[in-house]
Length: 254
Figure 1: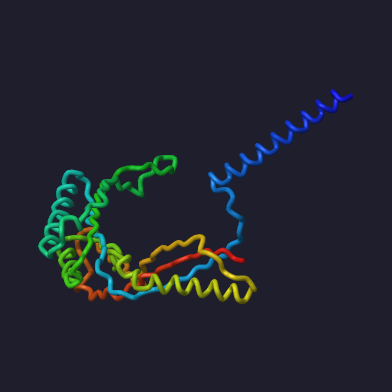
Figure 2: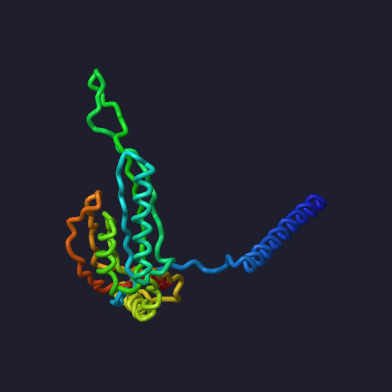
């Protein structure tokens, strides 16, 4: 009987030793891994502020579209017009790095009136169409009207949207960033007062910047043959851009 009690006490002692060792190990490992942080609730708020600035770059693109039955002929004529247009831009002061070819597309144009004896449409190449598109960044707004006028005279028959942008909005975001974060904190404090809790430490922040221009000019499309109903250079005003700073903050709540 005494032997059985002795064995039981030995087993219990070993069990308690294992529990103690595991407990010490768990505390020690939690301290090392950082998992001993208390759980907390959070609240997240957002705010935004804007600064109105004058844009410093304009971006547009133009296309030369040439059609005909001889691909070699339309390629030669199209390349000549595009080269002349690019040289004209450089004469106005546009830098090489601000001129980029974005499209070179030679495609067949099918006849719409060819049918077989069963009344089924049979595709037949009537001619070819070559489109070259060039993207341009303009930094001197005083040349824009002359640029459009000269491009049309050269034979450019499509001018796409022109947009006015702020090239580096981060420069202007600094002016309103602090105000945006102040507004976010005030919103969180108002929510805490209304809900009966208090704010703790900031647990997370984020920010992103928007660059918006409310004005956009639409396409100006001319006849593909080079003839244009476009009579005079447009008067184009860049207007103003809105640089928005959007921020968000998360707080521990108590």
